[in-house]
Length: 472
Ligand SMILES: Cc1cc2nc3c(=O)[nH]c(=O)nc-3n(C[C@H](O)[C@H](O)[C@H](O)COP(=O)(O)OP(=O)(O)OC[C@H]3O[C@@H](n4cnc5c(N)ncnc54)[C@H](O)[C@@H]3O)c2cc1C
Picture 1 (cartoon, rainbow, N blue to C red):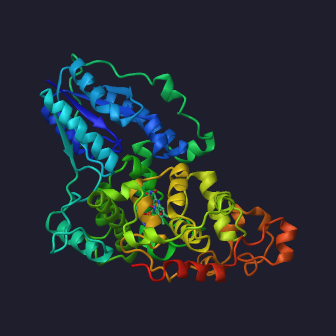
Picture 2 (cartoon, rainbow, N blue to C red):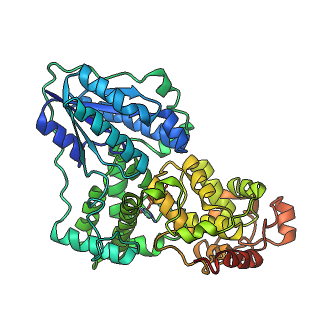
Picture 3 (cartoon, protein in one colour):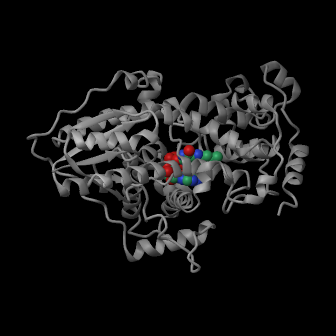
């Protein structure tokens, strides 16, 4: 019998448990199901969809080298996926489908429905752990609860990974070509979503596993050991810029961990500080994935701290528009938003600053920012995005305390001291001195036609603290 490997956010051949398991069972057909309408409902950015589809094209070439054909289905809504999957299996006489598990509630609902329908027809749907270092649900407190605080969670993960190190799954081997259908061409519906990203950005984000590994190797050789001091400065290329590759699964988090451990004599807690800190970031990713699994409500716009449902967010669409277009009059915020709009990516320090400004100084609902980020990020990923927004809004697990509101001007002075990042994205301020650029004088603003600040930072900070105070 033939087996299916159903690719989703795991568009790679190496360290691919679902593919390896499918290949162990019999000849494999690869399947990718595109769901443009569902993607739109989930606010997936056009740049991200383009990146994914380019990655699928490249995956098809890699699969064909192993004689594994890639079939493509366009099923607009996930509700219709189980039936389509069943028809597909029946057409090609499939008795097993393998996939790597995803943590979002809608993804799990889709998979459960597919599991039930397929098993009613004697076909097995088998899930594997391909997106995390440890199985979500396997890292719990002594009271058998999900960790809600990062540090003990990360300690528990490291302990588990010390006793049972993450094993990379061996790559699938070339199979015999006999008796399998050919790969599919891209249908018109998908071609219209491909290549919508400007040429320069497509080159900046090559969607191949080869490019992903080249980035990882380059980061490991050139910058990983320096990650600790450099990572907070957006004008320095101090971080890996691998998030889009991890989100689409061109690279597995296990592959990243292996390289980091290799560069640090196998240590995750000692040795080179930069590497230890980078491993911790991989564990933040892990933390949010596990939380998403443990608290399905997170996928449904609910805060981790239910009492924060009582916060009265402002209704100020013009302020939201100014924030989203980079017109707040706070240079670091506007520069960051322009980076996002122009490249589909934003530096982590800036994500925290703009998210805190939106949810505290503007007192606008974090869900607006969460959706806006998803609509524009090439690395948009439900768990990390939700975690980052809830952290900044003080509504999440282990989030920033509500009374510790970042001052965007001090953040700017601290993390972009020469104003190099601001000057790059706000060329109208390029002639200002390093001292003035963080908060230009009224005269300089007028000369540069740069807006005044949307809100007073001091009074808006107090307003935010008042809005959170006394919540039970
Ligand atoms: C408001 C907000 C929204 C965010 N939205 C997303 C998102 O949609 N997708 C996304 O991948 N990350 C998101 N992050 C986390 C983080 O900003 C990005 O992962 C990081 O900027 C990506 O750059 P990098 O690949 O150079 O990261 P590096 O610093 O090199 O880190 C390596 C990898 O670790 C993971 N990682 C790092 N920091 C975090 C973190 N704080 N939380 C979770 N994972 C992390 C990412 O997979 C990243 O690629 C968000 C953070 C905030 C504050």
